[in-house]
Structure formats: C-alpha cells, structure tokens
Length: 351
Image 1 (cartoon, rainbow, N blue to C red):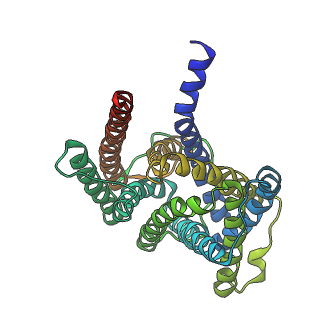
Image 2: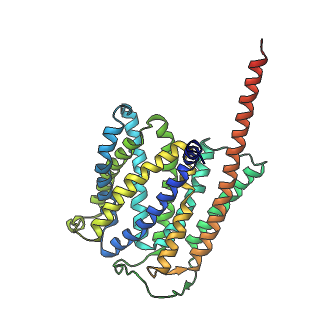
C-alpha cells in the first residue's frame, strides 16, 4: 500500500478509530467514578469539579489553536451554548452519576445503548435523518429503533436473578456507603439518556453556527460547571462535601475532567460535525461489552439476567439501525455520483 492509499484509508477510518478510543475511555470512567462514589464523593460536587478541570485543561488549546478561526460570541449564541451545556453537562451528568451511585456500572453501560435509537428518532423529526419505510434499509431503521427501546425497557423493569461469580474480585473497590436504589437509578438513567440524545442533536445544530470544537468544549465545561455548582449548593448544604484529598476522589475528578469532559467531548464534537449526531452514538455497545467483562471477571460485580437480556436486545436493535443507515449513506453517495456524472455529460454535449 502506497502512502497516498494509506492516507485515504486513515481519513476514512479516523472517525471510527476515535470513537472506539472514546468508549475505552468511558469504560475506565465507570469504575473510577463508581469507586469514588463508594468512597463518599458527592456526585453533584464531582460533576462541578470535573468540568472546572475540563475548562482549564482545554482553554489554552482553544485560545491558541482557534484564535483566528473562532467566531464572535453573540448573546443569542451564548444562550444556545448555555442550553447545550444544561443538557450535555449539568442536567444529564448529575442524573447519570447519581444513577451510577444507586446501581452498577454494568447497568448504566447497558442503558446508554438506548441513546442511539432516541437520537435517531429525534434526528428524523428534525430532518437530520431520512427514512423510506418502503425500502429494506428504512424498514431496518424503524424495526431496529423499536427493538432498541424494547431492550432499554427490559433492563429498566426486569432485574432477574443474579449470576454466580466464577471467582473472587481481582481488584477490590471501596465498599458502597450508599444503599442501592434500583428504581431511583433506573428513572434517573432513562431521563439522562433522553437529555443526552437531545444534546447530540443540539450539537449538530450549534456546530453549524459555531464550528470551533475546542472553544465550544471549553465554553460548555465552564458554563456546565457553573450550572452544576448552583444546583449542588441548593441540594447539598454540608461544606465537608466540597473537601477533596489526594485519594481516589481527586484522581477520578482529574481523569473525568481532562480525558472525558475535555478530550472525549472534543472528539465527539468533531465526529458529530464530520458524520452526524447518530454516528457519534453508535459505538456505545463497545463500552457495554468492556464494562461487563471487567465488572464481572475483574471487579467481582453482580451480574443480573435482566441486564444481559436487555443488553443483547439493545445491541441487536442498534445494529439494525446502523446497517440501514450505512446502506442509506452508500445509496445516497451513488445517487449523488450518478447525478454529477449526468451533469458532466450534459455540459459536454451542449454546444
């Protein structure tokens, strides 16, 4: 393979490689934050600190790299970014990490697989995606979306029996100081997934007006941190909740801020701009598989039949949607190429 062919292949595969890496990053996040919450870290304080770290981590890159590219921030655009931060940071993540505190990493990693189908439905309504129900590809998209939602409902309503662990935990996490509450956790993660889907759609809209991904990541981090801090001060009145030592709480905050809210959000914004909002959600099952394997075999976490059944249903539905979407893109590209070719022939034949 020559250098030019390699570069073409790399450019084509780059979004896929980056999204796989984001799922590996999220897999690590599940366990480090779960251990921190078990240690006593308040999830609302965590979200606030995490995005303060993220904002300062991305600020110098955004300032210098996009200094000449960045558009002027108008009041209307600031309000739009404020709402985007609400759905992508403060509202979504506060519900999400509170749910993690009440349930398990396996459950959350399985539930977020409902996000692609929810995003797909919203994208259809807002004309970011097109569906022809009479075609096989369009039919696969619709059926896949319904199957995906059925799997998410199964995981929410059915827990099932516990699967016996094969061995003791290789790595032990801190003992949970908060009593598990699966009903509360299920409601919060469903609400979080809906808010997250809205965020992905809003990303695509905002990026058309403000295409500077690093600057947008920085703005969302600082605004989201301020929103989360206001909410935390309202619900948490103990000053001790804000104290942090050099332990798992600090490391989870640094990792979440620099890697997840900084680097990964930037990657997702780039992929959303390049491939659309549905593409940025399509790799969640990778994280589900990794989390399940690590939780069960390494950390000795409980694994329930309901999570497995629902997770399998979600993944089947998800890839029905993705199969239909990928074939639609190929078909649209062929139609565009044929139209361009026809225009060239017409222009040549004209005297």
